Image (cartoon, rainbow, N blue to C red; front, side, top):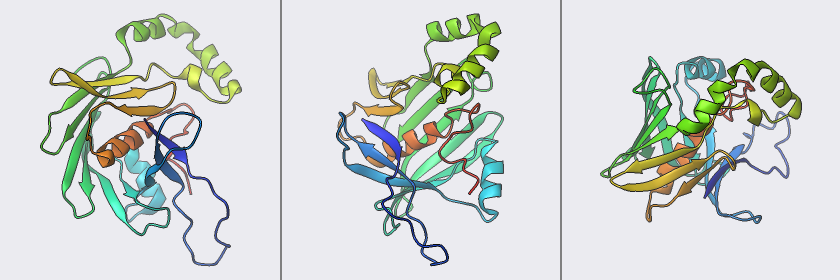
Length: 227
């Protein structure tokens, strides 16, 4: 089980010291109350235009971030880059530390791609693709049935502080070749990896990019900070 978390901070660099702040987010592996080992430290990789350019591009589906081996950026494990984004469809590549292809992720937005639900397709380099659809048909039916109450739900959700009630169904199960290698659980915001030997760099990058589409309502996605 992989989870994206905010990295703990014992102390920050002194202002004006010129020392960059440690990476703010990490992907951790493990189950249970005890913290598991860190798979990677994750941060967005900014384009030449900086934060404003990144945030403008992400509105069209573009994403770019780095998976580091440590919080001080001494070793790059992988990089997620946007190959294309537009018309509700975005294609990302996950590249290894030497630029080799680790895998490809494609997101097709609901009503803009090939169906009524958002479609995520993950293809490991040299491996079979797996397709996952966001949410179950049953729960989406319930969601749309109560559409007239959504304004009230949104307000109550915001007052509750987490926004979960205002979100649509988010569970994704990836299937391919008669197997289900991956599952994203909305309850835990966690990615479960069932396939033995699955590349953790690809799994961590997939979790990180899925979580960048968390909640347009709250603007709480980890990569959408203004500073």
